[in-house]
Image (cartoon, rainbow over all chains, first blue to last red; front, side):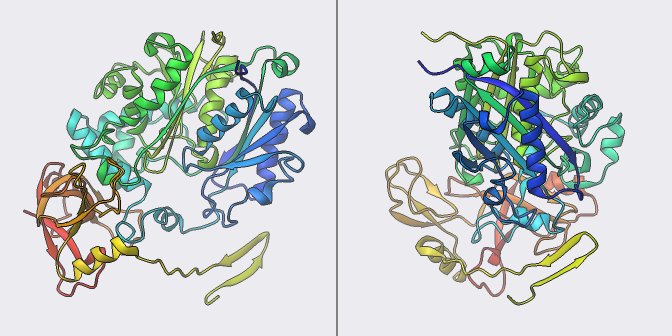
Length: 398
Length: 156
């Protein structure tokens, strides 16, 4: 039988624009050390390391997996780097999960760091991910391509910019209770509407910040959990899926997985929920840490995950359905990626927040009576999607 | 390399790196760019799935077969997605600019390019003109040079 996999410890460190006191590898080390201390483990207790490392062009040191080996105690152990853009942390977590679940290793540490303030040429860096022949001459990057998706989604479902603004107001308020959040505060719909237009319909407040910082998570099998963590969050379901590089194939009548409605997330979440035995997400899942680098992005995923039907998520937002204290499901009680986006570990932070909620360790933004929490991550222009379920109890295999 | 500099001031090392690349167009993009020089937008077709692709592909992602013919795309089409970039992007053209994914007549996929000739003094109004479903036409520049920017879209 495959091994049961539990989260033994998590750690987040220092999300802000820039950390001028430390290097990249020193930031990564802070997360590794913090997570080991949280678990009561030493580097010798870790069998393998998955390094969560997204594009490195922002910080300038290319492919810093090699630079980081010593700082994250990788020497002498199997170490692999995972990179799927914004989904990197979600994919890295699933890689670590697979290594433990297969029985190959007893414990795995997933760790990573992000630095983004080194270059003033960030938009140029983001444009570099596009095809050099057909796409790169356009102002295509993550903001503009998701803005185009938002235009089509909002027209299809009659959603207004004010609808997006209500979500931003809620999540910035949630972030007030999260000491790790980068952007936070009590703002109004009017404040969002008054923020400068970047790419229609996205204004400044619709867009996540770029955050520097680091994070780590230690996974273990039941033997390791008995020794180091009597109350782990069990990973009871995972799903991942990718889709065509060509955005223009995914927004036309012939597409199988319409990008405008984020249909691909249905595939990733169905796998995760089936695995976890979840049939009715809105009644069985208490916390959803959906990856939302933009205001439009989290709700569209909730719809495809089956929390509500397509096009209804923003109407439910008007009725406070996603409020962390009084709603049907607590959506991004941490404030989400919209408030804090350390790209390389943003997906890992979603998993950390979901696991913390299940373990009762979320601090001031802890939601009551959490049995199941779900975390997603999104990379590329929604080409890489991951979904994972964290639970207080694990499903016995047949 | 030309333009590269490194200097230390205070606790910060500042470096400027200039990178140069030569990207091979390959067979398919090469033929597409040749077509642009003749004011034609060339798509590839898979006879097995019936799909017509822009940008053109060497193989069909539906049938997993080689795309076996070239067809000329229509000179007008429908906007599937669009945005107006108002600020925050230092691309080849200064904002405001409009960009849209357009499905040209006779083609199954959409291709992005600039939408020209819009009045940006009222962005909300300009967005309504290029909303998904709006018809546009292809317009070529005076001297095509075999680049994607040889053409753009204008309102039909």
